[in-house]
Each structure stands twice: as structure tokens, then as C-alpha cells.
Image (cartoon, rainbow, N blue to C red):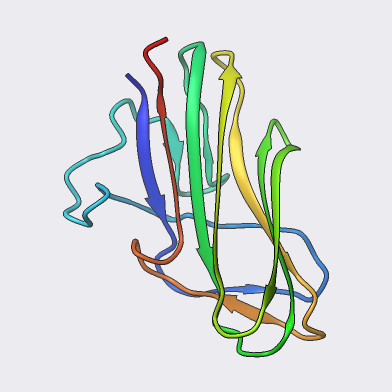
Length: 143
């Protein structure tokens, strides 16, 4: 079934109070071995940073995004379907917060899913890189 595991390779700057799509620019298996976890080539890690299943069904999506900030501020994470929020989380960041978010959702063949973040620290902050810190994964459920 369609499945993927994408992560952020290199830091990404997030401007203050601006929703920004996370650029998941690398793919691998969940253990970082690089063994082709994107079973059907359904994740775009080069331009749009999104998952387009290509097969209708129910999907489980999960993301985790970590920041480098040690200042106190709010940190928001959003999973979007076709550009609209379908799941949101918010946490008060105090020391390099990592936040996860999951959802199970129906998808048509041409729907797409991506992740946005926003922070309100008063200045720019970075998303931490690496498959163990900042990632987006999903798979089709056998329903």
C-alpha cells in the first residue's frame, strides 16, 4: 500500500508569526537506513514537500517537528489536506520543543497532505534536521 517516511535534512528557518510549510527534503525508512520506504513514489521531497497517495482509502499520518529555540513562545504545528488544516497542535516552547501530531483521514487519489509550522518568539527560529527530529510519515490502512 502507499507509504512514506520523509524528514528534514538541514535546518529550515521559520519566520516569526508566519505559517511555513516544512520542507521535508529527504526520504528513508523509519530507522534511517535509506531502504526506500516511499513504496509508490508518492512523496514529493523536491518542490512541494507533500504526500499525494494516488490510491483512495483511509490513511494514518503522523508528523514530528523539533525547534532549536530555548526562548519561551508558542509553537504551532498543522497537518493540511489540499491546503486546509485538518489537525492542529500548539505547545508552549521552553527548551527545544519537539511536537508530534497524528490523524486518520479519508483520501481520494489526488488529495495531498503537507505540514505547516508557526512560532511567535519575536524572531526567526530553526527547525532541527535529521530523521530522528523532524519527520512526516504515513500509510494506507487496510480497512
